[in-house]
Length: 199
Image (cartoon, rainbow, N blue to C red):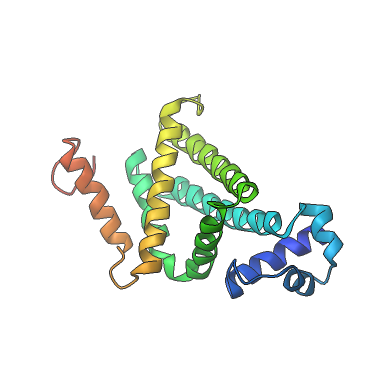
């Protein structure tokens, strides 16, 4: 494993242990057994390293989200989405520290142009990945269709909203079962389904 990989691995551990705001360059060097110059050489800055580590963690989540959606026995695209969001909601307890680090980074990114651009790039990559999966679900060969980008943005908004609710009010944040009921309720309200059954 090279210095770049060691730094990323250390950054991810530290994000969960200390949170974004409290990590120093020396923490990263000590945890990775590298040197300060390695951070600049491979990433340009400490913030860029941490942004990439957060992005890699959420890319892992995006891969898991996709895997659940593809693996489920559900037959409709909507039910595949529900299965993925239910699994995400039910995993929030295990993801709390990383979600908190992401929230710290997002607050800082609002005031730091370099970090904001890095975060925006990570979001775009996740948006493209989710859009491609959504297109695959409905047999559409062109994931570049704006419809799928819109679907991906909506899914990311749901995911971020669930994380924020869980961080700030875990006692009342929705369970996976409640998320499923809520999504199905939206379909009923839109006249696209009846009762609580599937489409």
